[in-house]
Image 1 (cartoon, rainbow, N blue to C red):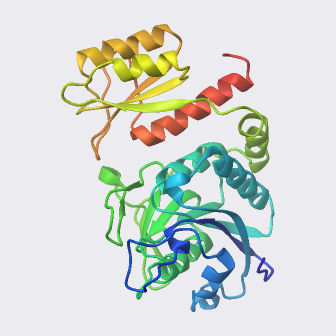
Image 2: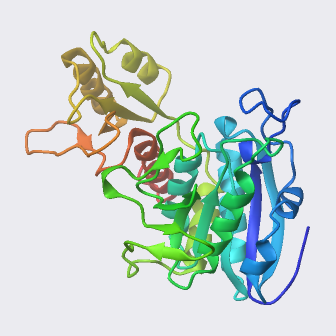
Length: 329
């Protein structure tokens, strides 16, 4: 663990492409993710001391995984470590190095369970650490810049100089360096020459205390088996066969990624309604990259309140965990 002291920035490593290595420096596809430790990553950021100024740095390796393989065990440990450091009065903010594939899900999970006043900044890379021109060092520098900014709060993602909030961020490109967007909501801000230019802010009036968040993590996330929630998609010729099979297999929640305004093939919708009758929690989202499902009084399946299918799944998992913890199911 690397440690300097005073008002601290904590960098938590979880693996991903940002920590990846390739046999050849020009190979930005055929690499192995999660090979380089967070301490080594930080040493590659030459200007970090200039951004930190008199501030201090702590690094901790929480996990070392390709984010396509992200799972509940890592989420639980990451949430616990975040809660630990957020409760430290000398910590200004947290930066998490993460893979790009599931970054948006981890961001929404952490925002949902922590709801922190302090900034928790996820960052990433589209090229491995061994690339001819790796993007990881600049992204780390930008993430630390955001974590130090006095206006930063809550869980955000920083990639290619753009700041996204946890609710809206989504990976929308499989290769380019600027791989994330916030859809129609737009970004929160931009990092420009070691300074943040904010263009919008989130509401800051509903954040619970860190102590309460830590209790929630320990009493719900850490002590209960995680419920099984799956995503099914609407498409031409969709049927209810997959839904019926999942219900028989004991699924506890389903998110339907509908077409357009959450529309569902009649056979798929009928199967989802049968699932609800069988006490499976069902939520309807849209597979569209922008916009949200607009509900009306005749809907038989609840909408996702603007969340994408993957984030609606995170919320449904947490709702079911909470219901188990309170004895409601």
